[in-house]
Length: 66
Image (cartoon, rainbow, N blue to C red; front, side, top):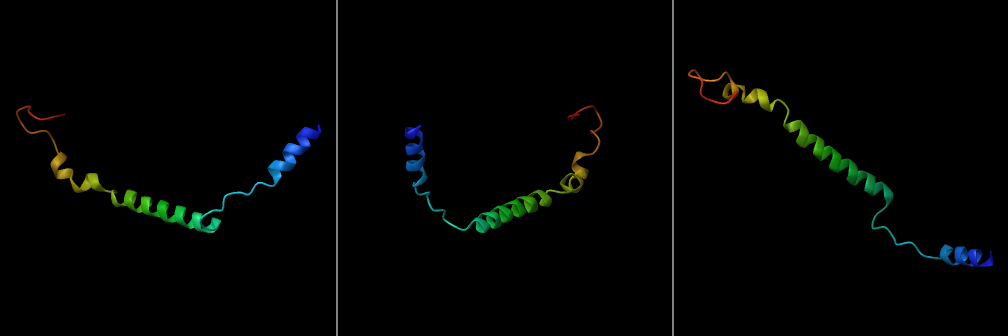
């Protein structure tokens, strides 16, 4: 058992690597990224309706894709 206590005592004194910015800054960066992605997604709304004249009925004569 004394070996276990010695190992725990040794690992307890290890220094953790410092983080590059405060934790709140990580949250702010994540929020900005998600808002940016939301704006990109929002910009694609109603794209199908803008080009509905190009996707109308198939031309006469049976040519074209269905």
